Image 1 (spheres, helix red, strand yellow):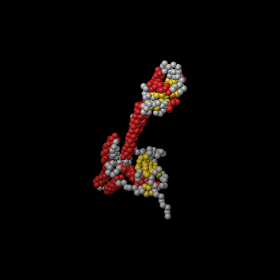
Image 2 (image 1 turned 90 degrees about the vertical axis):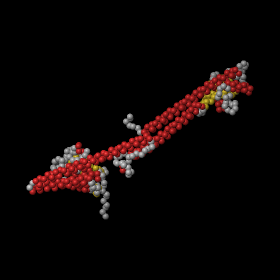
Image 3 (image 1 turned 60 degrees about the vertical axis):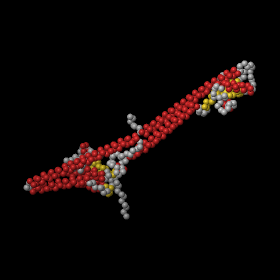
Image 4 (image 1 turned 120 degrees about the vertical axis):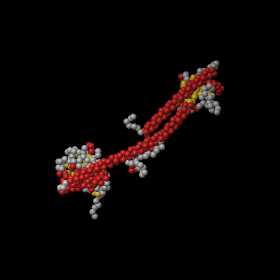
Length: 508
């Protein structure tokens, strides 16, 4: 197969072009056949007029046998006798007319015994007198037969002149025949061939044109149906996003086979998608349940152990320490439940003009003590003073999670950097650390719940960040580190649509 497949329309157009080429070749052959047939007819006419001319010469020689002297003047009686000679000679040559010509008196006899008119033709054809005179003069001057032909659109005129031997001085015989090229079997075959050829070419062109039109409309309708999104599917259609729509029959048998196959494939795809979604939902539910159970079991185990130790000990201080640990673990469980509620019940963002620089500085100040304790620093890049429409509370929470995650993964002496601003029609907020980076095994599932690289992490922080970004119509992702980064590190980015604040009305 060629590297680039042609469309069905291109194949049909190629077929139509081949049909035209075949028709042109056939027309050329018909014309050649007709031309050769006409040439044969003219050659046969030349042979016949030559024979007729010799026949007149033989009859004239017999007529003048025994004459003595020479004849210089031709009277009416002699003209009548010469006419009989011509009639007798041409009687066996259908379609040939002729006569006897003298250099001094011109036409001495004329006859057309096989003329198919209503009566005998006795008048010399006036339109051909010049041709007849010239042929006879040439034949007389060179003393041998001379033939000529004159072709027009509908006929070919063949004329022959022959010198005569006898008592009449300067006499020649001439014969003439007309070959009608627009009549006869060859011309009928040509007309019939062209008619059949025109009918087949026109019929084929109309058929191919109709086929191209039908195919174009049917394929366009199929493309329109296949291009429908789930939002465009009418209510009541059992289609989920990404499923193939049910295609209506086109009325063309070959295309309908493809439509039936696509509909069957769409049904199987929808069933497979439903099974996969159900399996994915069950797997996610199992993963979520296992994560929740793990996160709850550890605090409960610590609470139980401390409670048992406190009951077994008579030391009040030990009981007090056990109660402090129990309260700490209860607070841990409360934070876990709040995170789970935030993840499963996301709040619709309330958009308002937001000062990004203020949010960055507040977030850096909030985690400054933890960063200092771990020997790291938090820096804030200069932010564009424009105030986009955001939910400031949700953005603060997302940044808190990202900065806390960056501080916990940063080695001593490193820097965590907050930056962001408008890039075209997008708002991009980045938190960059200089830690070891994200392991390849975690990158694909980094924002899934309970996926974490720390032993003491819940794996819910990045999942909450992702849900906040989605609520704003954007996304959260692990971005490429900046070109000037000193180490591998990690850069987390919030990519949100930029929505500008409405202009502030002037003070009255």
